[in-house]
Length: 117
Image 1 (cartoon, one colour):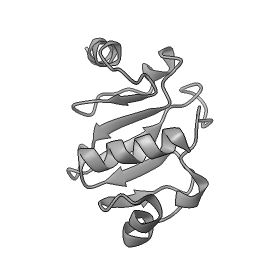
Image 2 (spheres, one colour; image 1 turned 60 degrees about the vertical axis):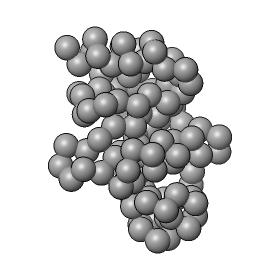
Image 3 (cartoon, rainbow, N blue to C red; image 1 turned 135 degrees about the vertical axis):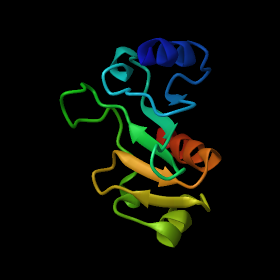
Image 4 (spheres, rainbow, N blue to C red; image 1 turned 90 degrees about the vertical axis):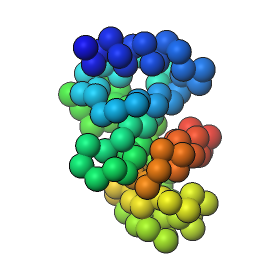
């Protein structure tokens, strides 16, 4: 079911580099089927925040098609907001595969910045 939903969302997405999911689907083994895709934005199951995750080259490795910008690595809250210009940015993992924002709009903006970086 998740694969069908994700495929449908991807098909209807204009910018194929970023996919925005309406809920958290198990997506790790589906997204690598879409070669243009760099990042996925989805809501957290746990706390209501929105996640931006880099799509891996292969679901069995930790190599991303594109990393988040190096200047974001390990930053939190105000530091990350200042560097990105996204006021509700909360966190970026040191491994440059995950960033978190308070809102969907914030996560999408982070994704757009990452694509262009």
